[in-house]
Structure formats: structure tokens, C-alpha cells
Image (cartoon, rainbow, N blue to C red; front, side):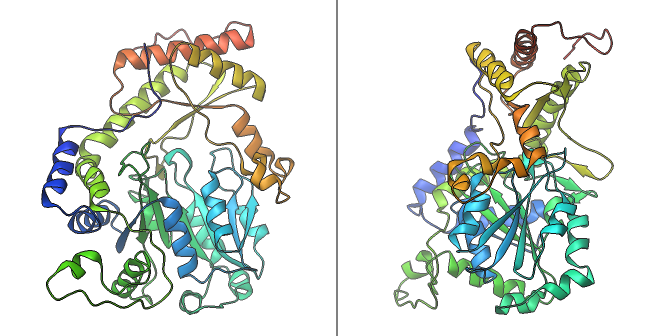
Length: 417
């Protein structure tokens, strides 16, 4: 039974939306992107949404928008995908890495200890779709002593007058905190619509603004839309209208706009996300939970509690009391049965790029601990019960083989679907 890790959800609705775009003869940024942005605002209840061509582009844009420059520091977790750190480096600033908690999220106390007068922003990463503790992070940012350390060196920094809190929400579209969209908990939330995400545009991302009231959100939206088009004061659709050819470049922008042909894929998916796709992902996660929670050897990912709920983007299963080498052996065994699994993530200090910059994994023991025991299981709407059962049994058998011992259940409970 061949089971891929994370194929995109392409149904007839997606095909129809893409064909409709092709028939209009307008495939670059236009009405489909605007429609996608409106759907994202509706889903998240944020103040504005700006679609871009990748999460990374969106992160670079918002750091530049805030005036991040060489000499500045941005606090990030050591446990994340490389793009979180690379966006900081692309602005010439320094990524200040801190460790995580057992739930994979950035440790707020480690963040507090890392703040200096050079700190301009914090990236909090929602690993696997589980939201960070944004209320704690915002409380830290707003402490009198922390605010006194802040040195505003750009117009946007002067208006905010504190550290900018950005949610790396690449995994967490649809995640909830206190009953509302988790995207409302930070100043800015940036989503990814890469091919493996809950909603995809093949490649793409979106910036959601939740800035405080002293920002003019309409003005910021228009400015950021221009920023995605090289600082140009007219987009292609406006220029295409009769007599509308003349344009100006108002500032040094980026070329990172999302085209309509990509937005069409995401638009078809996001319209049924809350009613179909997200509930299907949740149902699969709960089946995994039921199957694995009876075994002492497995440590389950956080899915929901009294305050937060995941977007069920990944199911990062951890195995207790194993080494990294045993974990790799388990993965090899699972893959040999044609079940594709993954690891999220290799901590940044273990990657050559960051090791060469002087970061050491020895400084981040929790990040290494979580990574060394983690296996991400397939989770997507197309998975049948038969495939889920096969994945579960394959994982259990692989762990038994690696540990060379019988895995005991907590109780004698049959796995049922």
C-alpha cells in the first residue's frame, strides 16, 4: 500500500477555478488574488491580508517594512524551518536563537532573557499548527522594562514603539486561541500556501495584519501591495486598462506578488476549508491519537486544550527513550513498507549554513531532544481508514523492531476506527 506524505487536495472545484482563470486570459495578479485575500480575512478576522509568492517573501517584506537592518536582532526559535532565520539574514540582521518548550513552541522565558536594546522583532513559530503562547509573549513585550529597552529607528518602529510580534503561521491556518483565530494574537501573522500546506496555491503565502489602532490599516495594505510589485503605484490589471499605461516607482520594493493562476487553486480550497478540509484533518489526527495513546512509548503532539486548538497540519509523533539513530532506523523501516513519513524539523544549529555562523546545537537541548525522537506521519483529507490503520500498524511494528522489545499497551484496548 503506497502512501505519500502530503499530496495536495485537488478536486473538481480546484480544476474549475483554475480553468476559469485561464479562460479569462488574466493569469497574473488580479481579481482571484483579491478574492483570496478576502477569504483569508473572513477566515482569520484579521484587519487585512496581502497575498505574496511565498512565506519567505512575506517575512522579508514585513521585516523590511518595519525597518529591520544590519545591527538589529530578531529572536527566533532554534526549532523551525530555515526560512524563519533566512528572512532575518536577508535583511542583514542577526537571528537570535532560543530554545523551545516540550510542545515544540518557542519558550517565552528564553525569549525574555534574549531581549536586548538591539531586539526589534520576535518570530514565534506555530509548529505543526499548534499556536504559541502569544498572550505570554505579548505580556513580555509590553513589560515596562522591556519597552524602555526598545530603540525606535524607523517610522513604523516609532508608531509601534515596542518589539514587533510576528507569528510564523506557516503551519497554522485555522488554528484557534481562546475560541478565535490564532492569527489575532500577534501583530502580524504570515501563512504559507506551499504545496504541502493545508491550503495550497502551489507556491505562495499571505501576510495578515492585526496591528494596533494607531496604524492606518488601509494605507498599510496599499503600501504593502505596492511593495510586492517593485514599489510600483499601479498593478498590471490597472495598467492594462485603456490609457492606464503610465506608472511610477515610488520606492525600492520587491517583486513577490502572487499571480491569479496560483490564487485560483487556493481560492477553491479555502472556500471549503472550515466546513470540509479542516474537519477531515482533525478527524484523522483524532484517529491517530486514539491509536497511539494507549502505548506508553509514544508521546503525542498537542492538539487542543482549554485555550488552544491546532490546525492539524502535521502529526509529529515522538517515541520515548530512543536515540536519533534509532529514530532514523524506524523511519527506514516505515518507508520500506511504502509509507512516506518526515521529520519536522532539523534544528537550525544542525544545518551547515548556521553552524558556519557559529550556532551550536549544544545550546538548545530541548530542540535536539524533540527533533531526535520525532516522526511526522501523513495527515491529509484523502487518507482512508484502511490507510490510517496501515500507517498505525506499520509505525508500531517499526518501533518494536528498533527497540528489540515488545511494546506494551497501557490497557488492553483494541484499536478501532
